[in-house]
Length: 443
Image 1: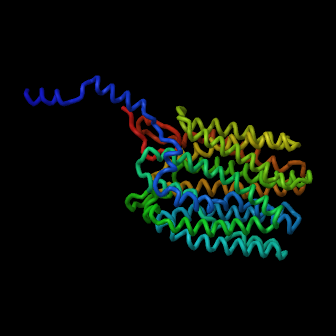
Image 2: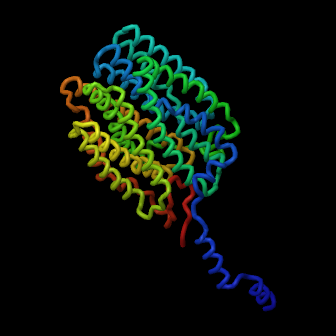
Image 3: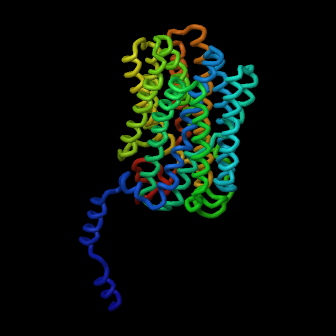
């Protein structure tokens, strides 16, 4: 009995428990972006990583502008860009898997060297008036060697932060950074191709990839150990593609890629038709700015709705917005609709990445992220091809039908198979923001 009394005296009272819980609930549940960026060592991989991400935003548009200049055909330009995108989509998941197994440096160093050489070769062939099959031959290694920096940066955050509550903020920050590249990249590519030289965009893209990729690979302190995507022990995992929910997400990301590709070609054709090719980068930048700003907001909101429902709502809004693009016949109207479409894309992208965190084991997430990145690239490649053909044959904004068709088909698939995005019984979880690695069970 004495021991019981002593234990009772030393244990917290019920009121103390309530006071502690109250204090915890009053504390900020999620640190902000400022605290994240003050993380030691973060800038050593963020800055070179941002430069090395530019291929995804610059590559397709740079090829379209260069090949269209040398051949006079949007169809040929779209086909060359499409080959690059398909190669990127097919090789991206294997690049992610190799990085998980052998380490990021082992994949990045040879990859960026090949990419720079292939990009320079493609440029020389285009300027030399080479046949289309030769451009295709150079486009394959150019796309296949694009470094998968986004998934690699996400993996490095896992090593740098480990189980810190900043992980959710880092996931949101990465989504916003992806969108920011689509503001900077197209503007830079268009400015270089129209004001400097038609080949300047592709050559600059290759140079940024080479320098940024090598500097990123040199940051060994934050690199995940080989054999693990999250910095823990070496564990073998099945392919992320075997997860049914990942396959559904791949379809939805294909639709998102159709928006990027369709708008790149169609905006270029529209601005050329009105005699203002320099506006192409501005209009695409407005579209990407809406994407980025919406991503900032989404990453800061404490969502209460389930991610499956959020994805369905966001994708419905995206399909409706994209369906109005082909009706726009003025710069102002196209800018407004482009901004709206961009604002609808970010919630779908971020929610898709959120679902990966809960659907896929940690050791296979880098591969899963690259599957989604590859799906966007593949959708973009297909859209560039189809939109280019439509613009060559029909003009008058016919290429804008591609984003509408792509998003509507993906939406139907998503709504029909949304049950596959369920994460299974894990107990109730407290969800806030994006990028959860360890859901907290609630009794």
